[in-house]
Image (cartoon, rainbow, N blue to C red; front, side, top):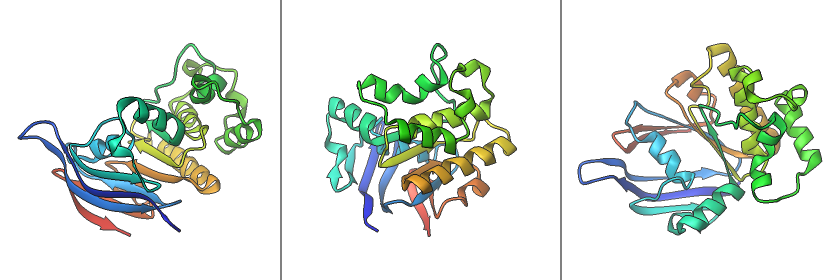
Length: 222
């Protein structure tokens, strides 16, 4: 199994006094599941944003498939993110005027790409969404909306899934179910997953736990 991600001496400063990510280095194997934990303000969400090309580092490098994505300009970052990285937000970010099917396929529709129908059907089947495709987001429960958000992240066949507090807006029962579905889908589709959580029990679902404190990576547990 090769290294999908290699992070070297990564720094993100917002000003002289605010260092959100401070000289962080680690690597992630292809197909693995990694959780990032830490208190509020520890830098974990900033680290995820850097990985997802939603922000640019002050210094250091992020190698994804041996390509230094930290050097990309804004246009290249946006294109790479749309094609290669699936992002799952805790507030779902579904478009209310679109059907569930169109919400799932939105990343492909934006790029005028053809939908792989067999893959789409496998995905909605894995996530239990087959009966909901003609509905709209307001007709779904929070757990169902999060499953739609997961399907949308996977529809582009990403090499990396990033999830920021993916169960943060759900009760425990729904959160556990959504987490199981996300990780099961990733395992079947052989996709690398990195997720941020404040829940230490949830973090243990991952094969590896990274702990952040004051912008520093303080522990890396296999």
